[in-house]
Image (cartoon, rainbow, N blue to C red; front, top):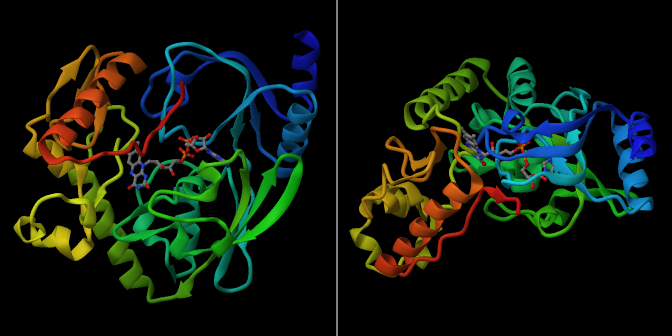
Length: 313
Ligand SMILES: Cc1cc2nc3c(=O)[nH]c(=O)nc-3n(C[C@H](O)[C@H](O)[C@H](O)COP(=O)(O)OP(=O)(O)OC[C@H]3O[C@@H](n4cnc5c(N)ncnc54)[C@H](O)[C@@H]3O)c2cc1C
């Protein structure tokens, strides 16, 4: 064990028994047996290769804003990606390491009067986490602005074009394999600074009025495509028909589930698709609530709702 600790120090700062409660926005979970925080992409590649070659289990952590961690420790190595490179690549492109905060990337685009990322103001987490989950808001997502990504795949480093990343609604190829996103290039458009800033501040206001401030991992479930609605779509609010999506928050309101509480977890009173940790919740508390949400959505509307949050067992 001491030998592993020493090896890991070649790649970044090492901590043992690092609590996930302090590293995730949900503030749930036990500890990472080894936590290595990596700030440089070459070191990250070196670490991933070392772990693979030596058969050491590893878990990738970005900003921890889309995770429900388990009530037991994570054995092996948790690789926390804090890589930092962020720069302009020509006049309208930005190249960005996976560990850069998504908000930091957006700030650079706004400073250069570039449009295409302003929908993401207020989305927490890192660029790597956003690419993996095809993060989105206001009808836009990563797939609408990513040019290409550099990834680590089982010991190889590959560059994938946008169309090779398998993007879908809150999906990418990387959700179904063990690829690690190392870096991303964003192709943006020159725009009018005032107009871009106005859009960004409007989106920010909409978010702050809508989302709870108690620990959570954001929307728990993916919203539902309107084609999957079993009833008459003309009876749904016009906005849903325009967007082609039914918000799970609205479904939970119809089911009167806001406020449902188990242990320290609760369906937020402010937003029906947010499960919040208001009092030292466990993963078990959250999963019990989530089962009730799924069961009621199915029993009343025939809807199968899928988690957007990554549940680590
Ligand atoms: C208050 C709040 C509001 C939110 N609003 C939105 C929103 O509007 N839209 C939206 O899409 N999301 C939203 N989210 C969810 C979350 O912010 C995004 O999903 C975010 O992109 C996750 O990034 P992260 O770095 O925190 O990933 P993490 O939570 O650290 O990780 C999530 C998953 O991605 C994997 N991962 C992380 N980095 C990499 C990498 N470099 N390579 C491969 N895999 C990786 C992890 O192993 C894990 O499985 C919200 C969350 C909160 C708490």
